[in-house]
Structure formats: C-alpha cells, structure tokens
Length: 475
RNA sequence: GGGUGUGUACCGAAGUGGUCAAACGGGGCAGACUGUAAAUCUGCUGGCUUACGCCUUCGUUGGUUCGAAUCCAACCGCACCCA
Image (cartoon, rainbow, N blue to C red; front, side, top):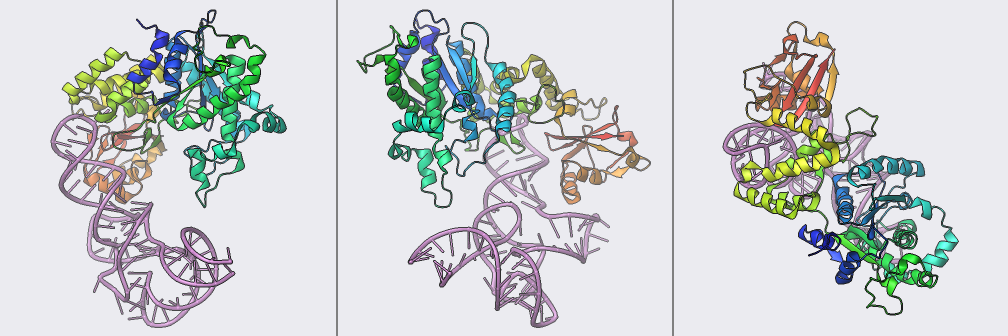
C-alpha cells in the first residue's frame, strides 16, 4: 500500500499532469521518505509572475499542482515573482516585454495572494508558504551576482535554450540582455529556496523545463560549497544516494513539469470571445463594481467545455478522486446530452474559487436562465423573473426614463445603445433573425419599449441569442 | 545608403479607369437542428435608411479625369536583396 506521499507522482500521472520529470524513480523515493522530524514532508515550489492583479485560469494548473502536493502530505511553497516580474520571462514570448514598475508588481503580488489563500491551506504541519523573490533578489548586488552566480552559467548553454534561441534568430525581434538574464534569476531562486528552506522540487509547465534544469544545475555547483558547511536539512539519511557518492545531498533536487493545457479544437485554453477567464471577480474584497470574471461567467465557462475535453479537464483541474472521475467519464460516454461531467466540473471549480454560497446563486441563475420553462424562456405564462446574479454579471447601462413616455422608443434604437449591437443596422439584423428577447420574450422587428415594458425596479432585460444579456436601468 | 517589391474591410486575399461597398476564404454574430456542445445547413457581417437610395472607405497627401481602389507625384509603413 502506498502512502499518500508516494502517491503524489502516480496521481499526477493518472491526471495526465506529468510531462517531464528528472530522475523519476529517485524523486518517488525522495518524496516517500522525508527525514524524521519534518512533519511537513518535502517542499516543492512553483513560481508566479505578478504581471496582473489577478490570475487567469491558465495559472490555475500550478496552484492546483501545489495543492495536490500539499494534499499528499508535503509543504507547498508559492514564489511570487516580485523580483523576476521586474525582468520578464522570455519563454514563449515573441516580443520583449514592457517593464512593470516596482509599485505595480507589489500591488499585483498583494492582489494575487487572495487566490492562493483560497486554494492552499496555510495552517497545520504542511502549511503553505508564500514568499516573494524580491526579498532575496532585491538585495543581490550586481557584482556579487556576476561573480557567484554568473560564473556557473555558460553562455553557450544559455543560447541553446529554446526560449532564447527563438528570439536570437528572429531578426527584427531580438532579446535584451535583461530578459536573457531571466534564466539566471530563476535558477538562483531555486538555489536560494533550496539553501534557506530546504525546497527540493520545482514544479512548472513544460515550457519551464529548461529553466528548472538550469536551477538544478546551479544547486549542484553552488551547493557543493554549502554542503561542506553542513546544512542540517541536507543530512537526509533516508534519501537515495546512489548517483553521486561523494555529494549525495546535492542529488536530491528535482524538477517536474506538466503539459500545457490544450483544447481538442486547437483553440487557446482559457480565452473566450469576451477575453480571458479570471480567477477573481473583483479587484479586491472591498470593490463591488462588476469586473474581471463573475462567478456566473466562470461557471458557464466550465459548463461549456467541449465534450472531447471534459474528462481531461476533470483530471487536470479538480480534486475529485480517480474513482469519481472514472465514473463521470463513463456516465458522460453513456449519455453526453445529460452533461453530468460538465456540471460536475463547473460545480467543483466554481466552489473552489468562489465558495459554496456563490455556487448556489450561480446554479439558481443558471436554472432560471436555461432550463425549459424557467423564467427566461417562460414563453408567456407568468411574469419574468430576473435572476439576481444577472444584475451583477451582465453589462448594464443607464438611460433616461423620459424616453419611455408615451409611445416609448424603438427597440432598435435602444439596442444600438447597449453592448448587444454596435449599430442600428446590426440591431436590425439581429431583430430580423429573431435573436432578441425583451424581458424573456421574443421581440418583433418593429417592437418599441415603453413604460409598460419596465420590470419592477426600473429595469429592462435584453438578450441576444441564447446567452448574451444586457440590463438597462431607467431613471 | 542602393535596389526590388508591397500596403485593400476583423484577418488572409482578388480586383489594374465607370457595371465596386469592393469577388473568394477564414473569423465573428444570429437562426435551424441539438444538449447552453461538436458537426452540418441558412442568413448577416462599413454607416444611415421600412424601402428607393444616400453617405464614408482600398497606407497618407496632393494631382490627372466627366468619373479613381485602379493612372501620376511626393511622402509614410512593411518585406526581401545588396552595401
């Protein structure tokens, strides 16, 4: 019987989340046997770039990987790139990045930490640790860095790296010395975490494998000195020591990567027509304005996962057990139309990021808007009931109530003022195609809105197609 | 610095004096069918107009012409080659 700590890698493998891994067998053994007196197990880290004040679902994979690590009985370490974020990672980027100011980066680090507190457990023996690499990179002197760190890097090796090579051979988009050095900083991060906190594993996306290996290399080189001074956590009696006899502890440093998330239709994961899917709805807890991605939109994103992707996403993103996932996959195969797997995915993710209360609201709204005979598609019987969530998630505009007096105004004119149509012509097109509903009822091409159209609260709810809503307020 | 190309709508790409709001493909939006999928089919895709039609647009600015995306000039951008 495996212990949870051992099972970490197998879990990742089941979920298709193990792409590359250094010394897999040794890593498995390493995870299985943390030294006595360390209830927190082993320590692994993943880095995050504070380029925005929130994270998108593209960033979800590393957070979830850390949480899996934690659930397996180990200690996750979140490294906020407050320092590296000032530089910018050239991986996968075709153009030099714009530099952020230090204030921007600091603010982003603060804002993002909410998300980590939500998913990771910061209490108990395996309490997650959050650190900011500005704390050690910020104080690094240029000369010291060149002497102590830079000496271990061969430029010949660095220019072989894919992320750099691409930019070197691109005639009109070169790479600055700044971004070229990014690799060194990331490697130094790993070294620093290893030395001061005993972090022995770095997790990252497959595009990070090169950087991770460079970090491992650096630890082997710089660490040779440190071993001599007998760092206590390096004395790991249970650790495998077969590889390098004279320097066993230095061998116990690992990297593992997951594959980049792809969609079956080749589209970019995490992007919709209306932009990226964010993990938070608001700028901060005090903010009440609708922005980012509402819980409703978040839920809908997952619910609309393509059939071909749904099982993969369950494996990648949820903490459901292998049995539950296998079961859902079977049910999905048996009756795709029922969309049980989609619903489970959407529920799980929404609850994880937004909590049970929000999930409940979102599900009510979904039911009201989409189920047959619900408020939005009532088809004539009973008053239209506007789901509360729509008020906060749908785009809203305010208009002068005087426009509704008497004959009111043509619906065409109103649509052109909303996010639903860019011009009257477009509005007319939509109307003639029976795409527009007012307060849940299909609207005629020559329809007008009057005071009689108003819902309680002075609102009129417009819908284009099946899913696109716009709320108008009248005052 | 020299040469040769090239610039058309959201993107790609036809169009080389009137019949051009500009073929075709992709993308987008909507409808039908379904499951709030996928695939398929249909419509729309510069603006205003119930409509006839009108207005603005083919890198920019001028010019030739009754008439210019199309011809001329200058300028700007981009690509490749030479230095």
